[in-house]
Length: 203
Image 1: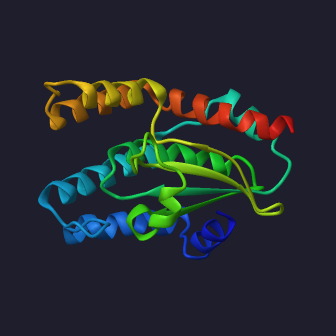
Image 2: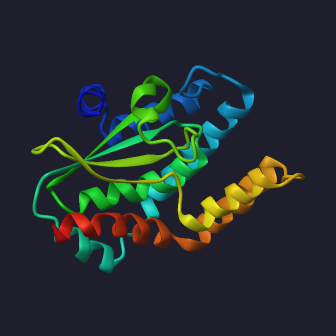
């Protein structure tokens, strides 16, 4: 695991570079990953617009800021993502702003389909769901925690849809989940990822 994570970090990008990649894809009508389907390209364009809005308007809540201020050792947050992922578009702007709250935190980004060995270390129910945020201690070279691919409320919805004999059409389901993210304004993301960090702070 250690060698895979270190190797992935060496090939990772910062948030600005990831956002520039998303913007470039949106302009060119492309997407990250090996599959260049109309559907994925459409979602990549949509996600770039969502992230652009959240980069400007997303807010870190005082309780989240207070929690992050308690981190007193260097941490690296390694984020596994793709530009077509709707959950990533809603989550990553908050993760980046959380990282900015403490100068000891560095956030880095890699693409799932370019880092299969890394992704296979953090499967969700056997699937390659993203985004995944891996909390890495660069001093001890240990994984301290990981979180993702989405808040529990939305993850439960995803699992129920998968188990349904007559699942809701994906486009309708996507609209419904995106509305939840919009109305929630990052509270679930900050609370749940914050909870994953509590044990690190306590140790």
